[in-house]
Length: 169
Image (cartoon, rainbow, N blue to C red; front, side):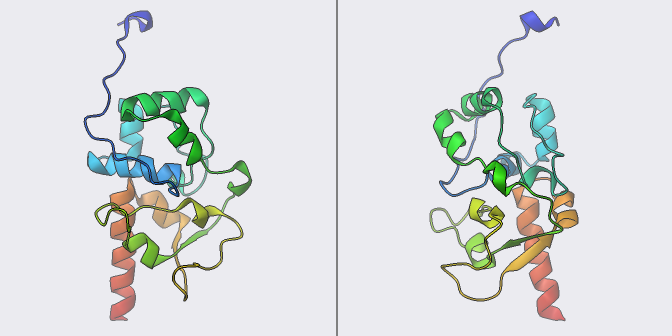
C-alpha cells in the first residue's frame, strides 16, 4: 500500500491514563503490559517512532519526545496531549547510569490504583537519594536488568523476584 493511502490507526481499545508523577517510559510500558507485549512490539505495530535505545535501560528511560510523537500517542490513548507533555522527563535528567534507584514501597503501593504500579518520574532526578514518604533504603535495578524487561509488568516481576531472592539469602 502506498503511504498516501495508509489509513490512520484506530485508538487503542484500552489505554491506562498516565499518573501525574509517572515517567513517560513507565506509562508506555504499562500500555504494552496491558496488551502483554514488549514495548518494542507496540512501537513497531503502531509506528510510534519511540527512541527505545537512547540509554542502556532502553524504554524506561525515555528522553523528551517530539511533538509529532506526543500527538500520535495522545490520539491513540484518547487523552489530551498536555497530559503527555507533563510526564516527559526533563532533558537535564537524561544520563547513563548502571543502576536506577527507586522506592520499593512507592512502586508496590500506588495509592491511586493498586493494580497499576508505575515508575515515578522523580526517581530519574539526579538529586533523588531518598524517599520523602518512606524512610529507609532505596532499591535499585541495573540497566542490564531493565533492558531485559519488555514492559512495566516485567519490571514489577523483576523487582518481586529480586526481593524474594534477597529474602531467602
